Structure formats: structure tokens, C-alpha cells
Length: 387
Length: 133
Image (cartoon, rainbow over the protein chains, first blue to last red):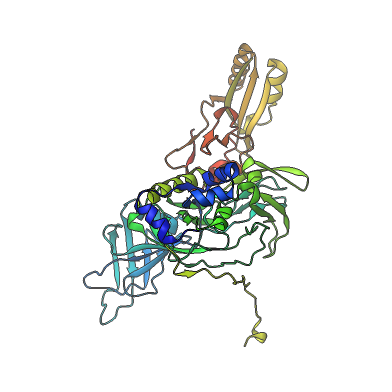
């Protein structure tokens, strides 16, 4: 048993033993879980994948005369302005009104982090205190006040495997799915993925300090669609999309190496988000969780050609098989492809390992993530049945 | 045996000529149609030709005599390394494994295997793959 204080004392004195989530799986296999519990203090995780539910709050500062920005655009991408006068929220999936899918909210966020200047345009109805009715100017990350990512749902604890049984190619957020189960895509870093290393949210909770987009950030809340009650294996790991995190961090310290705009063909805009979370090995239970390897983490294959909320599934496959490049669906070998970058997930886990070794201490959650939430559907209630 | 990749462009009045048949029969070439696009206006064929060097040469000369424009397909795609995030979305649609992962999960591109179907170009979420020609 270790406490957060003890782990942090070791970090401060430079004596903490820090491994990445891949390294600890190898160590666990070689020396056992008990050895890991006794010798390892912190395990660093990482993931770098498209996470649509992301966005940035920006405060532009006040012009002279000032304006209460009602409708806002950055590089022709609509920005939500239903806040105070010069606050806005850039949603990652918002689409340019001029060039469509070529450019969107995710690209605005990337361009700002890259230090590029962007065009800010806003209109208003004018008030006694904010007389200006329109504005057009140039801004950059350095010229504005606050700029922080506040992502409602990141770091999904596991995700689907997508296949397509139809006769036509499907363009989806899971990439391009070829007909007749011509391929299978998946989007999780497997044994490196943050929430798969702490399946019951013992150490990851509100207030946990993390790596977000290359800068320190925090877990702000449970993520939207957080679904801890998802079906789990004997090892406690969910076998389909489960827990999620809402994350926050200062864009001014982020890097485009770990935040990138994305466009999925005929689907839309998204944002590649790099997330890493350090996990303290408080006891043997935590050691057991971080030692779970790709061969014991399963995801479920769903048919994306079925246009219903509940899609038929084709069984479960583990991340070792998925990483191996081929799975067998309906007796037929199907090539697999990831949508999230394992290479960059490793880079994040390695970077975070260096941070921790260099004094990045761990935070005990100020509030645990809920363990009892279900996942509600949206029902269509006809007018005659409405309250 | 030699191998060559060529782009053939021909006009409307040339469309009914059995080009590939002649290349196979008269010049003993193995013809692999990598891409074909025929409209009512014009035709474009990307062919892989395999055979004796002098036969490929003679076959190409014959094509030129038929007023077919023959251009070498020297290079295929370029993957911009600074843009690529090594995610793998392109590998999902590549029919030949030309875009693939190397041992450390870096995205690799094998020009030899590429048949220029260009499926990977729209599949790339960060637009890192471009046609070279």
C-alpha cells in the first residue's frame, strides 16, 4: 500500500519508479503483479485519436467601441457566442461556411495553437453599453485573453470495432468502411489507453492532473455519455464504449504535435487530441489493472451499415488480434486498421513519464467519477404524447 | 524481364481499339490495368507492363504510332511526414498494403506495391497524402 503523499514524495526526491503502460505489462508478465505493486510507483498512459466532442473557450478582449458579439466566426467557421460579450466557444466539428469540409473548428484550434493569425468576425444588434454592431479583425493565441480547451468527452474507455456488411462503401467517423466486411477499423490505444488502465476509476477522477495536448491539463468532470455500467470482462475491463472524461487545459501551452484538426471523408471535421494520464500504483489491485495487456482487452465489432441505434454485433476481439492486422468475421479474414495513432500514444506516455520523473506530481481526485450512471437514449415523443 | 508503368491518354475516336489485347498478343506483355477511366470524351489507362525490355519498347512505340499519348508513371504518391500523424486510417482502404505500418507503427509507403487507386488520399484525415503527378 502506498499513499498519494508517499508517491509524490518519491517524485519530488527524484526516486519514483515510472513506467509506461506498455512497459509495465511486459514487467508484469516477467515478474508478476506483486513485484509491480512493490516496485513501481507510477504508470503513464497515452492516447492520440480523433475526439469529436472537443472545443475551446476563447476570450477575445474588448474593442473600442465595444461590441456584444452575438454571431461570431473565425476563419469563416461559426463560433458559439451565446455567452458574455466577448466570450466564444469553438466546437471542433463546426464547418466553415465558405469552404465546407475543407476547414472547420478543429482546424481553427490547430491554427491557433500553431501561432497562426486567424480572422475574427462578429455581428451584434448593438446595446447602450455595447454600441458596435460589427467587427472584423485579426487575432492570434497570443493576442487574446483566455484560450482553453474544454472537451466534453475525451479518452473513451474502449470503443467499437466498425465493419460494413452492405454492398456500398460507407464514409463514417470510423473511417472508410469497405463493403462486404472488407475491413474493420478500431480506435483505441489498447493497453496504453488511460481509462483501460484504471477500469474502475479509482485514481482518475475530477481534478486529476493530466497531459492534454502537450500541456498540463485536468479532468474537469465525467465526460458526456459516461457509461460505467457497460458490460465488462472478468478482469473488470469494459468490452465496449464505457467511461469518458471531460478535460480542460490551457491552449497557450499546447502543441500541434498533440492537437490536430481532422477531416473524415464525407463525415466531417474532428480533432485529434493527445491525452496522457499518470496512474499511481497504490496497491496490488492497481498493479493488476495496469498489467492487463492487449490480449485481455476486448472490443466489440458492430455493423455500421445498419442505420439503427442498436447495431448487430459480430463478436469480440482483443487488441492483440486487432494490432495483428486481421480478425475473422463470419469465417472470413478481415484486415484491421486503427484510427488512433499508436506511435503518438507511445510518445505521449513517454513524455508524461519524463514529466513525472521531472517532478510532475500526482493529484488525488477531489471527487470520484460516477460508477452507477447508465446511458440514456433519446426517445422521439409524438406531440399527442408530450407532457 | 522488365517492368514499366505507363499512363495512356487517348481520344474519343481511339476508344474502340483493343489496345491491351494487342500488347498481350503481339508483344507478349503481361498487362496489369491499374486504373482505367473512359468517358464519352476521352480515355485514360494506367498500365503496368511486364515483359522483355525490347518488347515493352516496341509495344510503347506501337501505341505512339496509334497516336496514344504515353507517359511514364515515374512516381506515385507522397506522404508528407510532417503532416502525417501515423494514425492508420489510410491503411484501412489500401488494397495492396502499399501504405502500411513499419515495426514501430510509423506509416510507411511502398511505391512498388502502389497501384495508384488513390483510395488513401480521401481516407487521410490530415490530408498528408498527395498525388505526385
